[in-house]
Amino acid sequence: MSICGLDFGTSNSTVGVLHNDQATMVPLEKHPHTGDMETTLPSALFFDFETDDISFGRQAIRNYTQGEFGRLMRSMKSILGSSQMDEGTQIKGQVYSFNQIIGFFMQSLKSRAEAFSQQAMQSVVLGRPVHFNDHHPALDAAAEQRLAEIARQVGFDQVSFQFEPIAAAFDYEQTVEDEEIALIIDIGGGTSDFTIIRLSKAGRQRADRSADLLANHGIHIGGTDFDRHLSMATMMPFFGLGVPYKDKPTIAMPIHYFVDLATWHRIHTLYDSKVIRDIADLRLSMQQVEPIDRLLTLLKQKDGHRLAGQIEQAKIDLSSASHTQLDLAFLNRDGVVTGDVTHTATAQDLEDAIATDVGRVFAAIDETLVQSGLDKQQINTVFTTGGSTALPSVKALVQQRFPAANWVSGDLFNSVGKGLVLEAQRRYR
Ligand SMILES: Nc1ncnc2c1ncn2[C@@H]1O[C@H](COP(=O)(O)OP(=O)(O)OP(=O)(O)O)[C@@H](O)[C@H]1O
Ligand SMILES: [Mg+2]
Image (cartoon, rainbow, N blue to C red; front, side, top):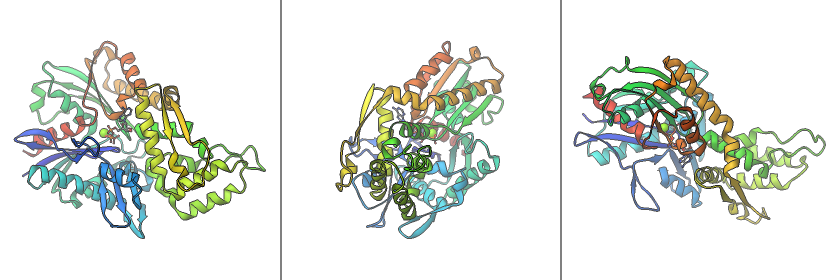
């Protein structure tokens, strides 16, 4: 029987399998620029309207960016646990449920793992955030159930779950010699998840770790929220955010269009022809039309994901540079939009835009400590993983809060997946 661990992430997914009895991350996709095999598959699908093909990962993003006619979907995990979970979405005249869409993606992950292992995958440990939904336990439970259904739908016979930060702890535990208490911080694309756990060499063998688990907590804030807030602060005014009505100068363009445009999993809702008509009607009543024209052009060209991609890249660039340029030349494509469409964003813009989010993440870390009943001096190691832990403001706060702890920066994108396959090994063999 072959087993795997599958980390279906908001931004990136991974699969770990046993290869010659060793937990191994599956090389999932060739990087289009470097040619290297990557163990992450970006959680993206592209429905090509001309060929009716569905592509995944970097290939999906590339097809979209190169202007193929079709529809890109990203951050599908954010829909799990939300009230839109039961809505479908229309793609080329056909309505797909999110179960189906996530199913296509999971099937692709499974097939890639099977091609690598040369055997069928029957049992899976799936990662899950501590909360799919911070406020509604019923939606949270429904999200897990939904993910389990999807896993069965794509052909897994045995499906179980482990919390993502606990999985990351198991990855880190592979290197632990003496018993220690670790705080695991996983800040990803959709959620930030934390575990405080006692780890040891002997612990690795134990099937039941409940006595070692001291706290487990999470909050629905991650890199896609940082993208949204950076976009709202630096980019959306260029597309009409804040533009007032001609006859009501204290009232501005409805904000929800901009929030949707800045939110990965909501972008596609703006391509609806009714939404575009509504914005075109509003344009007639607004004090400035240039920003609204840019918005209309962007939506008609279905360039919302392109813009979001540039914002995300700017955020990543700004984690190691003081400023960066966004080039929105794609807006000039048909000559409707004229004028300067380059923008500079600075590290300070990013820090200001995400300060509230980052503050909430660290408040949740404080709550995790309270839950454990420990004092922060008792934390021996802080283990960080997840792409968003590369942000300078996050790093500075880890250092500031836990100056005495040993800080281990794990593999940002593979720790959870590795821990999940270790868990699969314990559970299914
Ligand atoms: N160098 C960087 N600086 C800042 N953010 C980064 C960097 N590299 C990646 N990110 C961000 O990290 C996030 C993806 O991280 P990761 O792959 O760990 O998330 P995920 O596992 O898909 O999400 P989740 O676990 O929340 O479901 C994205 O928002 C991405 O923009
Ligand atoms: Mg993750």
